Image 1 (cartoon, rainbow, N blue to C red):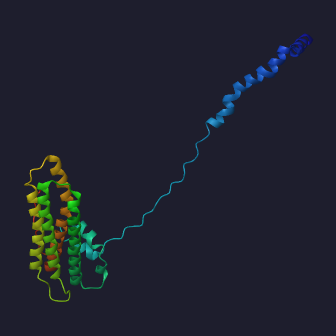
Image 2 (image 1 turned 120 degrees about the vertical axis):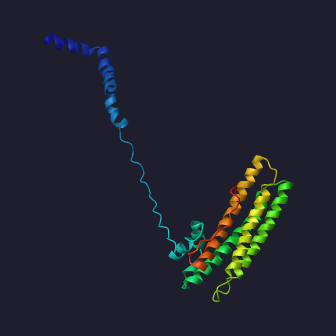
Image 3 (image 1 turned 90 degrees about the vertical axis):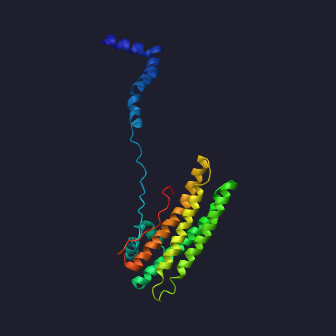
Length: 243
């Protein structure tokens, strides 16, 4: 026992032993313990995600029951509902027949606005050659005529307190307005165009003119509802299926 104690003291007093005790052993211990020292840092849980902000949209107002019942008698009820939902006069305390006449006038007026917009943008949006320019000029003239016929049809609704208007005359005017588009597109299909130009003009004209046709059809549906309260069907001129 004494000899071992002596040996340890001897080793401890040597320069090499001092180096081992002060340098090598601490470094070795640090290396051995480093996984444990840094494991908590490396495996710490990720920060919680930021709270999500949920936007609650207010419920959309439901259309008036009068609008729903009226538009149920048209060929394009969703378009009809969208058109009439922006008309505040429908909420006034008129009798049902007068409200229907107001609805018809407003639908036709919105159609006129749509025709005017199409007429002013159609030439600016299409880069056409001489042949197509002649055709588009004819279409623009037909849109002018459509505007006139729609305006004339509205005149038969005034004043609202008088006897029922001449619905037959109104239907003739609205039918003529629809025929104008049919003539425009029949002339379009007579043009000798390459596939790309034909497709481009076709898509544009369909986007421009089809809503006008649908709104005129809805106007005819409201006239039918005014005349027969939905007891009879009505026909809307059918155009070329290509359009």
